[in-house]
Amino acid sequence: MSPNTNSKAGPKPRAAIEAMDPYRPPSSGREDKLRLDFNENTVGCSPRVVKRLGKVAAQDLTVYPAYEEVFEQLAGYFGVRADQMALTNGTDEAIQLVVNTYVGEKDRVIVLRPSYAMYRFYAQVAGARVIEIDYAADLRFPHEALLRAARSGAKAIFIANPNNPTGTLASPEELREILEAAPNAAVLIDEAYFEFCGRTVLPWINRFPNLFVSRTFSKAFGLAALRVGCLFSDAANIAVIRKGQSPYSVNALGVACALEAIRDPGYVKKYAAEVIRARVMLCQELQCLGWKYFPSAANFVLVQFGSASGAVLRMLRDAGILVRDRGYEVPGCVRITVGTIAQTRRLISALRSISRADVDGRVSQTVTPTPKVLPKRVKAGALR
Image (cartoon, rainbow, N blue to C red; front, side, top):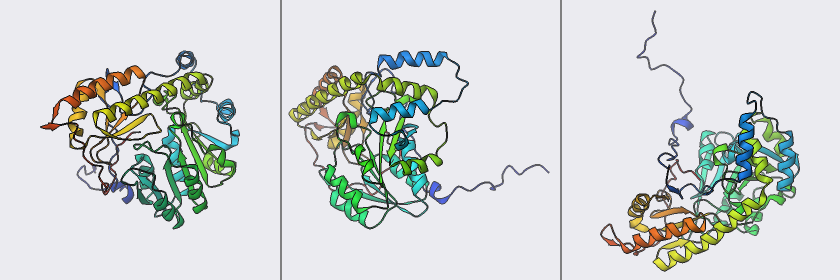
């Protein structure tokens, strides 16, 4: 008997998956443009990394990667022991590992809003109950609200510091209080933008057994395409994390390039320093043009263009400059990655042209006040 091709039979996905919005990063059509939309390194990785990549690619790629040397050298660079870190496929796998290890169906997971979409994503995949804590109207860190939620119980808490897309920082004291309020929760502090702010809680993994810290090579190091990250915690936690991790989740090319990147620390420091100078330049110009922006400790600035945001996005794209619409989280807001001084001057020139234009029938310098109420739900599909 031939199978019935019209049958409705087949595997049924879990309810948690069916209820999720699809994750579709808008990553196409970015060629030949000034890419200030995904917070990437805007000039490329260290030339030493490129040279090393060519050598690795020319070697035999039929062998699985070996990580022993990697753990020792990366641990030395970050100032931890090798048994206090896991090598991960970008920060995304670090988040996934924390969820897979500590979160079950219906467990409470606390995330901030707006923030990086993958915290909610992996919690939803696990079938967890996601508790969202809104940033204040001025996008200050919602310390008191988060503290109350942490004390009410959760299996995991995710905090980006600096936060994406706001660029804001939680103070060490605020983070310490969260860790103390939730001793039984896995608290992940995502430091993807550490190189642009210099503030870290990484040494605290020796003090707080519930602390996890993630870092990435996708931003300042310029290795986004290779997907390399690190997860740090108490050695006992990392031993458990590794039990649930694929043994070869990071490829040999990524491993080799990450090692070469830390051997050229001056390159990253020089790039980060220029970005910080460019960030100051951009913010000063935004103030002169009358656009409201939120102070940032990362390599991006969130700007409130209000009802003119759509027109600004289109006009910048027409000028060959890509920026990121974050209006689905903070209405009227656009996130602009900060690049080099030269790239920022090009951006400023375009913004000056736009500020003189009549946008959507009104003068674009009219700034819509920051909304006090965020949307009910953060949609998936937001890259860093």
